[in-house]
Image (tube, rainbow, N blue to C red; front, side, top):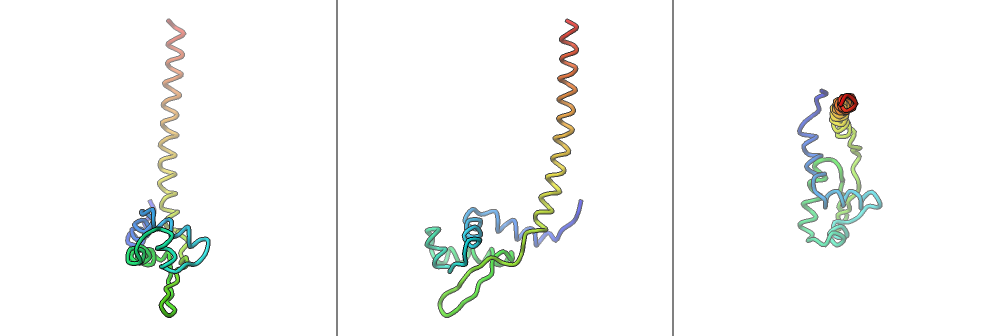
Length: 119
């Protein structure tokens, strides 16, 4: 199995584990937004949204820029390639296991048909 920087993956998956943070990423995929705008869209306090944005920023998924009193958020430069590779390795593992299970089921069905003909 390929080894990845676990701290990096941990930060990414922790950031993505929350529905609000995934929603923020979707929103920022459409257009940059201020923390105030994001807080309004998600019906939460500015403090709560700042914490969510901070988690996304630590994971490198979001960048912020403060101009005057407004902090604008945009998608970060990270493309989640390492995370996709990690997920893909497990997808392949499970796919192989299910393929083997399919073979066992087919063999059992074949044996059942053969034994049913003998009766």
